[in-house]
View 1 (cartoon, rainbow, N blue to C red):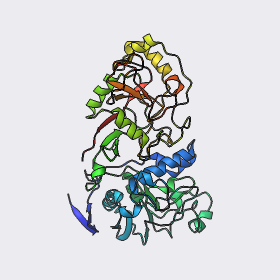
View 2: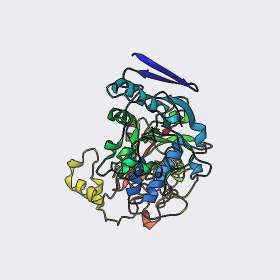
View 3: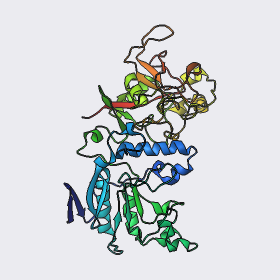
View 4: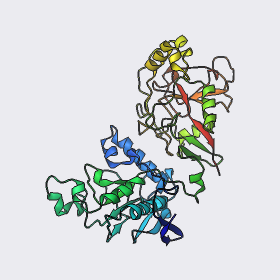
Length: 428
């Protein structure tokens, strides 16, 4: 590895290499739900905005006069670091120091044929430049503008929208920008979104980090859980919980028609374990300890709990084999008919303070019965309970709350609406 540049700022070392393609610089995907255009065009834009704000505050800090202090008690200012980028000083959130360093490495390695030396950078700001309740990513220290006086933002507030080139017809953001395409590509490889792609803003100078921030080596909380899990930290316990219902992949439907025993076995393959009833409720109630994951009051349809119930054939359900669904086509087709679950994370308002999705509604979730709650039917203490209810509310039409528990089924019972999620101990 050839080292060409070493930049030190406040104890942070930026190492520039001949190539950004190494283990220190894995490529990072942008998360669509954080995009301005996604929030604006979401079916429930208020819920989408809430999710976006809570995620950014959780990861990057809160503002004294801003919302959701309970999500992260640490103010943004505590995360800000002074660095050097492309030879110019910048103030950024410490969470994106690594990705921004990787952008610089890629530019120096791959953009020699289209050199560009910006005269000015705009990074951290203390005044919000967004409208409609949104917060600019500059406030979080996760946005960088290259030569904002020279690059137009035709859909932004003044003075940027007053740029004369904005009055030239039939031009795209690519036509207007003076930033080389190679630079834009370097930013986008490492989790930054070029706002020139936004159809409304067309902000040609602006790059904002919308990827998942890498774990910080000096941050025990950040390193306590795998990337696909969320740390739930309480006074008497700390643990990691899957962000989504198994298989824990955003945009995919969760497992259905699983027994608790199948859930236990699957979690073991992931080096995790089925969540306990206590862990599940702590994750659901969030930092504010609300009775519903999204707040103090029940709201039908915020989570996937507003579907019309379909009557099952229990003999067909019992014959369903999730390991080999095609072994009984009739059972498979019946489960598919009954299944009204939605892709994990689809309902953006159905999220806890800490970013755990679909805890109520969607699929009911098996948990370990550590409280030893007996069955209402025969008094037997089964090894597992069912929490969260499903797409048609709860048993006897009860509201899907964090507290609702169904203790009435043995661990080997198969029901069409049941799935699970996994937990594990936090690695402190």
